[in-house]
Image (cartoon, rainbow over all chains, first blue to last red; front, side, top):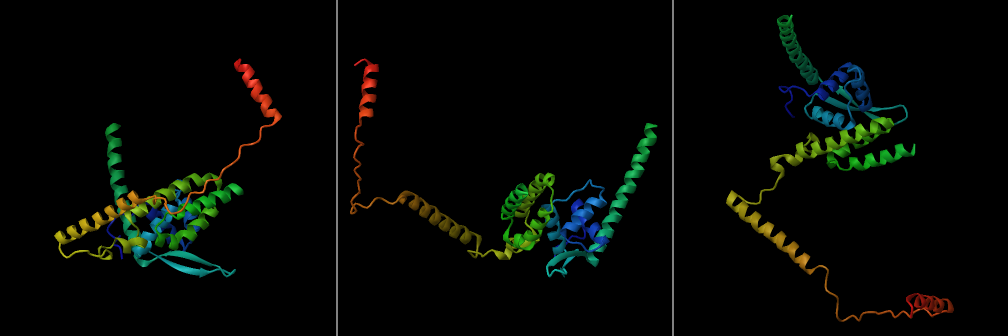
Length: 114
Length: 142
């Protein structure tokens, strides 16, 4: 299993995990969800999506299941694992710290200019 | 519709450049995603997939990780000196072999087999041909 817990997540991986935090999704569903949650500013291509999914699956942050559709076809769905949820929470905490520091420093910059 | 089909075929061809384990695992899904793409999205799909393929080969992917594990390689010698020697012999053999093939290729013609020469009789001169010849002679002033 690849160790991904201590490294910051790439923007694509972060968006994929956030999309899967809402519900289990198939590839197309993830693309649509990422587009929606980023307000259309972050668009994933199939190459980036599956390269990231490959790493997330190997890291145990995402799991895959085959779901049988009414027509008899099968569709592969991806879901967030407990480990993935933990990593996502830790990444959000890290980003919050960055935002807090940025807010303080930019605030003092504004005060100096005023 | 035919443009979309052509783009899909080209995309299917592009997917062939992925390492086989990755392609087997995600290729069908990637093609399905591309089927739902609009015409304006294709340039981004091609560039994104092209870059992803290069990264997959150069950086490796967990699907192809078995190939990049150190134990996946077969050691050709116990010590580094022996490996170097064996590597040198192996490389020399390959280079000499390829040079020999290059020297001998194409193979020389067999002398025992007679060459077939097809004699083609020239076309018969017609009245029109004679007229053309006369005309060209007149132009030259003969």
